[in-house]
Image (tube, rainbow, N blue to C red; front, side, top):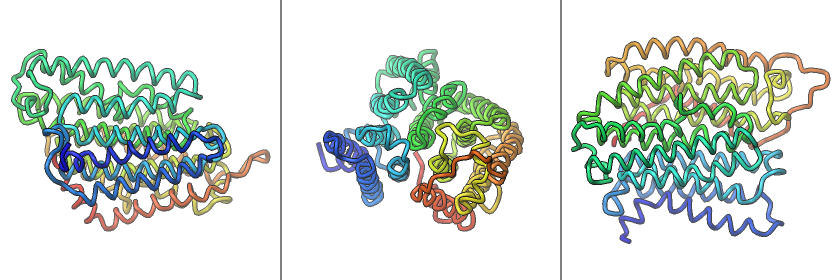
Length: 458
């Protein structure tokens, strides 16, 4: 193992090593989850710092792990979001009562798999990253959450089998597992079938319909920190892997197939997410539908092969969805409805102020970063001549405004006489306000993030 190998794998290795250390630290029963969660968050920040400090450089492990601008930016984003998730886990009193110390290690193991996926330039490494991302999530969602977790596990197992079969077809068609061989492949049935099955596996983790039918029920039963990991970290990993795969094959005969396939998946995801959100009354499911819509918008950028636009949207999505889900920690109910938000504006005005800014961003209203993110994505769609997809996205934006307005108005409704007051979750409130500040700051001064997004080229 050379120095280049270690540097290319540094974010994933640090996250995995941290998981092993924390798993050992969790063995004594006297160790509190909150202490482990904060230590895990600190180690995730170390992984993000290492990714940024090392920067781009030579590929590692005989070219199977890239170390370019895309892998650096996305691995750092994964580590930062993981740190926020672990801080949220430690601040959630309900999760602290029911969780075990190993949950922190499982989140870090999953994040290390995500970091592998965004750097993989070999199909086998990509699948290894997907497995490492998924297996801890099956445990975290299925151990205490019954039918929804079981559904996620069964669908995930089926998709995993489909993905490995697709990889086998691609290997049969090209004779190699590296992405470089995919760009030289000719259009033949085995090659196209393999790409389609690989797309199905990545779409499952990205949250694209019809492969994400598991998402609303799983989010409804998962704790906020795990739900955030599912909605953001898995999405970053899947789109990072997908964009790198598109870059390897998009210039050849398979380019049109990616464009059409992703455009259809994006339209379906955006439309179904918007229509479901406007009638949903359970807050977790409603936010899951909004997160699903964001995956659809990112898929528009992927269809247009606009990696910088997709990367910009992924960063903005991390702030908007992550901050919105953090609000759930302050609510007393495990599965809150819109009625449970009543009185929140009076009791936690700063929290609702931040929540309102985040909802504006999810709609795509100026001066939030959500407006620029959608504008950037629609510009990519226009360059790819996907004008019909812009129409779908614009109409869905109107419907998402209705859904977000329902959430915000519910916060200003008078509380019920028997309502339980929201908890004083200072960490969650801080995360919500920090996410809102990021949304406004990027919306007003987008230059630094736009420059960083331009470095995301595969």
